Image (tube, rainbow, N blue to C red; front, side, top):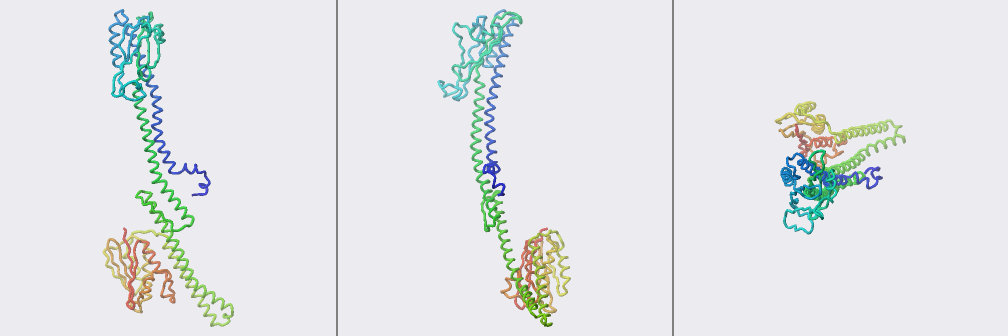
Length: 497
């Protein structure tokens, strides 16, 4: 965690966490159906307005029927037939009233089909054991006249009337529309068309819609909560542990390991993180070991140079023979130090930088390198010629092995290079006829700074460079040797074309 993040308030850090983002996503999933419930209320108002406009249009149309009727009766057959048809389709109640508000024609009570057992729509007094049809009656007021109702009074006065009242035996309310009847557009009012209809069908459809949306909201809330908990346990917590482990490594702690055991991307990330941590630990151990080895190797020639310089300062310079001997020692130690530095730089470059690997002719490369050594001979028995690697580094491997082989071979003895291979890779062996390597030294020849030819200027880094290059290409190195019979150093090189 950075310093700026550490100073931020906890709530602000939580807002940027994956856990908070997951919760926001799940909250959105819950808000959508809740918003749908709110929208249902708006939709309900629109449906009721549409219902009102529908029965207004019905009443207006029925009132106009009297004007076009041939019979002078207030309820001609055409009006009666149209009223019954409309009442049947719309499940409404249609009445024709005379100028005193008394009923001249009536289609009968509105019949409602109770298709739900919802407590909000059916009064507790009704039996809910089975769906049933209920007649929603609208009895006339005292005196058998509707003239006392404001909507009817308005219609008999020549103006359309609108009203809404609660229903006695059903939840919701009922819409009342009264439309004046005039035989002619300018004539006197001779009655009114009185249409009533309950809002139960609208409430029923909205009831089911709201119930479905509420169930969806509750289900989304439950599922979203479970999903958020699951994701927090499987994503947020492992990532937090990874972040804590990375912080511990950044603080210098070693041996940090994290094994989540999952098969998903986070599990693979954790395994790669463990591999990275182990590689860092190995690198630190390597650097520590290398520093110790370099210190040990540099300590002897530096001490020799310092001793010779002190002796020259203390008077040995007056003796020409002593001065020449000490100066020769200083030059030899300086040459050894220079060779060590050069080899160390080469080893560092090999181990720290990945050279570009390209297809090349391995047979041509081996032939060219062997041709530089008069005592060396090549035997090629591979069935393929090309490989994919860093040609310069492979050339360094062959050169180091041939240098060692020619250095330790007796005068006039030859060095053999044998290459075997197939479509998978090459197996190359460089053999000499020298004194061989003892069993005790055989296990150390690949170690840095190990050499049996220190007096001849050996640095002990040539074979270490060989091993670093070959293993960096995914190959292996080895040696076979017996004392008095020579040594055979070999390495493998994958083709990977």
